Picture (cartoon, rainbow, N blue to C red):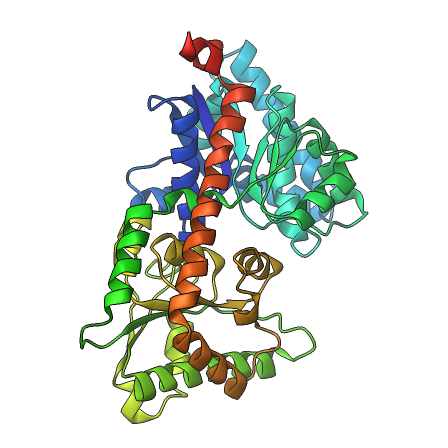
Length: 441
């Protein structure tokens, strides 16, 4: 089978982990010889960093960047954005399907090359993530031409694990509702997302609730090894704590300036306590770093250093190196615990058995830790206060053993839930020879 995972953003290390996990699920469902292509928003850059993945461009994104399209779009004030892209894609598809012998302009370009892959694909998957809600209208608008082209090809997209909604009632979301109703499968990460999706679809027949796909990367042996090691103790060495931060601007009722300062001061207070009271080695490391063309969490980490006393600052490291998913998991193995803002940094740490203290900037992280029975350790980024967060870090450190137990049990349950996607895909989309009845006979 040939499968395309579309609208990916692999320059974001969390998204890259989603693609790694999704590929693992797809190959478990359809066989190791399954060909998986990643249609990435920045395919040419992504392929330099992830050399073991095969990338193609997102056709609508490249069409949008063309000068002629930008001029027409500006003259029409964006009112014909989706229609113009759809018309361009349909025209190129018709040429490729019926007049491939015709030497038309652009036939050797990356847009047409990508469209040929879409024409040949057996399944199309919209990557997992958090981009379908009224909070992210631009993300929805930019993806609609992709989904509508998929439907035109007779291959409506499968939506991999999403935290979605709430939705608006404007034209954008009415179009998304049409896509949802035609989708053969929508995977959501939580019950709230399922309810929001039902609002658009009208039923739940094509909606399944499963854990985030990245949980398939959980290593039970590593989690068990770490649990055994924690019972022995740190054996006289200094604890090592990872801290993952990110830039953010939505602090609810607080201004950006006040909210950002509270966030930075709170993380600084936590780092200071860990260094001075626990004797820990603190390292700032995240999923989004080391790629100049993308946001760099290391910059936020360096801003936090300004809030640390000199005696502490010299004992804190800012790691700014790029790592692919496997390399990042190996780096995580070096630590004894983690304070994380980005959700997929939380998940990757959980997958290696680390106790995690989350700072939640969107509902998805809060929902995750509630499912683990660890809601008492959740801090909302728009409510964070330096002293109370420092106190929470102290309580989190003192209860590492019980937190690790709950995390371990919950993570393995979420891994099993994510793995259940294999059976769902196989039963609905596998060729006859891969169906369970055929295999057993």
